[in-house]
Image 1 (cartoon, rainbow, N blue to C red):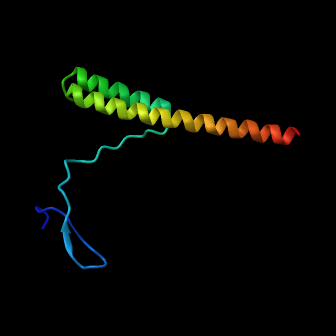
Image 2 (cartoon, rainbow, N blue to C red; image 1 turned 135 degrees about the vertical axis):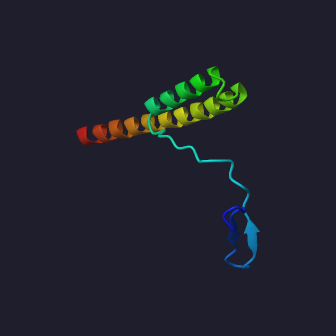
Image 3 (tube, rainbow, N blue to C red; image 1 turned 90 degrees about the vertical axis):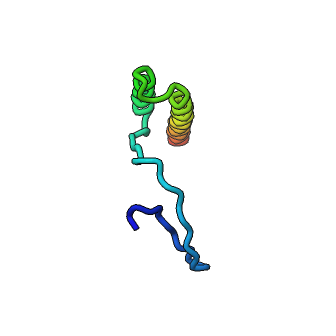
Length: 92
């Protein structure tokens, strides 16, 4: 069964469902900081310039990375505001 698609068994009905095939090895990279996102964007750019990644795919990946960067930025701002509010509460 290793050459076939993976299956899942529904716990309620007991029916076997075939999972769609995976498109390859899962890519993992750290995207916890703006520096991580910057590094990954640069990698995508270099791969697109080298022809390793299609330019259209690189554009989509870069758009996703920009969205991740916005979330990190918002999270950082939120943390800083919370710290300032805590400091202001202590000073009162």
